[in-house]
Image 1 (spheres, rainbow, N blue to C red):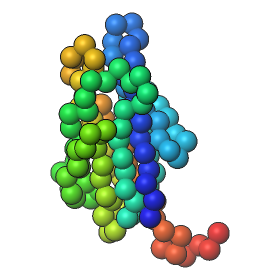
Image 2 (image 1 turned 135 degrees about the vertical axis):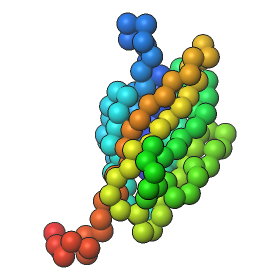
Image 3 (image 1 turned 30 degrees about the horizontal axis):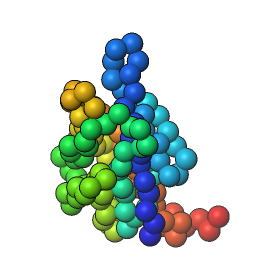
Image 4 (image 1 turned 180 degrees about the horizontal axis):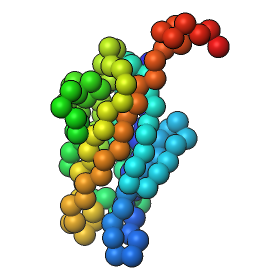
Length: 125
């Protein structure tokens, strides 16, 4: 079990707001990111240094089945966190809603992917 952090930074391009995301696994993207975690891990979303984000307002599942987001994300002073259920499998799209420093509301749709434990696929490598 480990903690995976996802850092958020609002960026402007041609007067359009976009979200730069990067995680502690070394992955990054603009407006989309697939973060790979194991069942039982904790995921933490927080703003990056000089993020341009006034507040992360909501992080939620975009799918009806809620395999990964069985529990509601917890909001704290620095962002949100989610404990991945031990029985979670597959991947799930989710939404991030945030306010920029100038008060504009932005919505982005990244993905969390659950990596199966090595013993589950019968491969020892």
